[in-house]
Image (tube, rainbow, N blue to C red):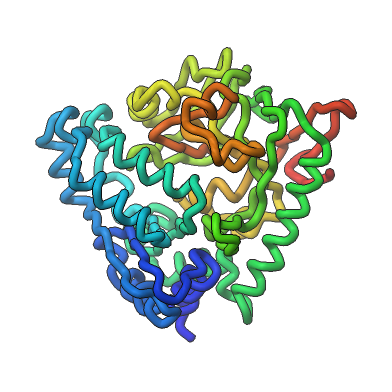
Length: 398
């Protein structure tokens, strides 16, 4: 079976676990046409009733950012909101193919415009995904992405690296992911048993303490939807993660891998947090983009995720900086500012947004991961049993 077909099978069978008669919404870019066709074929072969592609196109987006105002770019679109709600009522599964066809397409444009988006639509989609729908986000190789990684548009070389990260090089990728998911789930159970109240990340340029919520739960590997069906929301995934207390984050963090934020590459990012809020950012490249991004809403400056990854990660072992956060976040420990995960706290999935906020979870239209781990990183936790080392010098020791 060709690599692209193995990719599509993994996305459909293990990713969204499509069920006979179910509708599928496929978010993709025109740069991913061949992959989108393969995923569509695999979805129909698995019994999907219909597959609806939702297309984006980088140059068209650049035209919009160049000519439209911030107000126009972020305006409410009732027809789009209604479509999202109808998809929810239909019980669809969601696939999103990522992979910037031109990571520098928005260089030189107004950061406020590049960060602008219809917030209500993003919030509506995120509520569905966080509310128990099955979904998967996965990277889709293309020449522009390959050029960013290797300095030349060598798509075959990128496919090889992506295939290693996604375990497509093994005889049975679906079984391999089931095995890896079990390991990550066991790590989550061990962390749950510690009843941690805070985490401390320490490394070169990083000294960050983050508070955790009572009854918080660590997740690793796959998830279970509201009907009891398993799925993998991210492929690849090498993390165990939870959502922290939005009011408790103190210190500084050095981002150790380039980040792609609002379609632009950010390097050398350094972030300061106090009282749970991001109070200052600096960067070698892209600081203004980050500052504009943090103005999306009140929750954009607060953390929504803390995650633990060690050097045993397949992404880390490739030695490749993918310039794609879906991959790079799974190379080392990371955090995210913005939207939290309601399922991370027992009982929160059934709460309203207001109740979740009162509990300490963060609500936002954005969710932006940045890597703060790698060689030299140590993570300790504190709980009723005292302090415990979880990761020492990028090695899982718990």
